[in-house]
Image (cartoon, rainbow, N blue to C red; front, side, top):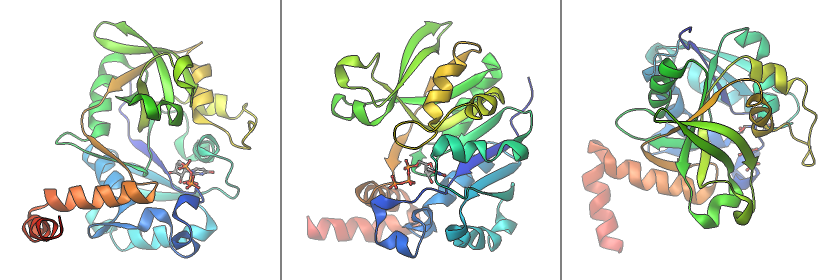
Length: 266
Ligand code: UTP
């Protein structure tokens, strides 16, 4: 089993939930306290020992590149950029990285999910990967009212790890096989790229990663890790606000001032 050296960060989406700010600024550059939200996942990848980060952007999102060009001296991994010219979905964004990835297993981190824990979420996945040696995805328990917004796994327990035997994207609650929802961290075998290359755009005009994973389980093992940590969905405005408030309260340099302010308005 080879070490995971490369990580893909898909950041080419349209970000319509942040319209109109995304007319001028990619949502991934919106700040959480004093840094771009995407920097939290870049830092998490570096902490996990990733050596090469591949960020998927579009021509309209060059400013992401400019942001990191000025930071690279503080980033331990090298950063490469791959362009997705048409927004055909997350699966397609990953497929655009086939050449850059080659035949190795690789990590994927979605910048929409900031996960705050002492041990980074990707590090938690890598620990299980080093035991099982095949694809691993992160899951957390999802409240019933949110199940229809997630990819949900059908799990079995195998030697104290969760084995995935099926996946359903955004099921109705009565069709959900569990309450384990997929969150944005993955370690994937290169076979996922092969499968993605054969998938047509579905009803929504997008190539879905979950569809590729659902196919993967019929020929390769896929495991899930119930990861620890507070997760913020910074892909929507209220999630970004929550992340900003909680992380400002967790940081020594901002906590006292901010706590005082919150106390004064509540
Ligand atoms: P989302 O489904 O959140 O889409 O993508 P989005 O376009 O970013 O946001 P909305 O729904 O329009 O508000 C999940 C992740 O996949 C990336 C996004 O950048 C985000 O990190 N993505 C999505 C791509 O890179 N390319 C795509 O074609 C679609």
